[in-house]
Each structure stands twice: as structure tokens, then as C-alpha cells.
Length: 140
Image (tube, rainbow, N blue to C red; front, side):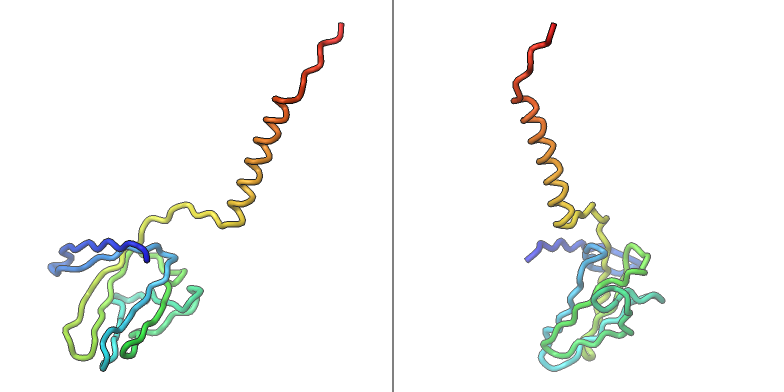
């Protein structure tokens, strides 16, 4: 399981938990209540939640039944660097955490890494062979 750092800060006069994630990551909402549904709704006018693939928005609110989970991804066309949402189980008091996207690091696919490694290896072998090849004496 990945490490999770939770930053707690005051935003707009409220204490809010801030979670960091990569923008292309999966977000899993799990309802640990055994009797009532969990409702998750983004705050603001833009919905960041999409089905796997990131192209089809899931209309809010997301409803997660008791003892169940729901995986969503951030929509590919979502341009903000963060968003907040409200999560509420039944009639309990809601919580308002915020998700902040980490700056994207350069990511290389396994196939690209293989070809890059093969190219570096080929250059290294060529250099070693060139160094080991006996040199012919100069003709006079």
C-alpha cells in the first residue's frame, strides 16, 4: 500500500484535510458504514469525477452503498490543480476535504524504458569492442 500524507490547513475559515494525488491516478471512495449510503459531491461548478478512462463524467452525487467502494478517475479535460468535495453518510455531519494534484513527474512506459536501455547497451558494447579491437600499424 502506498504512503499517504495528510496536510491539515485552514481554507476559507474551515479546517480541511488536504490529500495529494497524481492527476492521472485512481480515487477510491469506500463507505465503511453498514447501514447508510455515502454521497460524494464535488464543490463548485465543474465535476472532476469520470469513469475509468477519464472521458465519461459520472453525474454527481456519487452514491456508494453500505460496505461498498467506488473507483473514479479525474476527467481528462479537468483543468484545475485541485478540487474539493463534500462527503456525507446518511444524516451525519458532512466533511469537506480537498484533493490537490501533485506536479506530474516524467513517466516512461516499460516499452520505452526497454528501448532506451537497449540503445544505451548497444552504444556501450560498440565502445568496448572498439577499444578492444587491435590497431593496425600505420603503413609507410
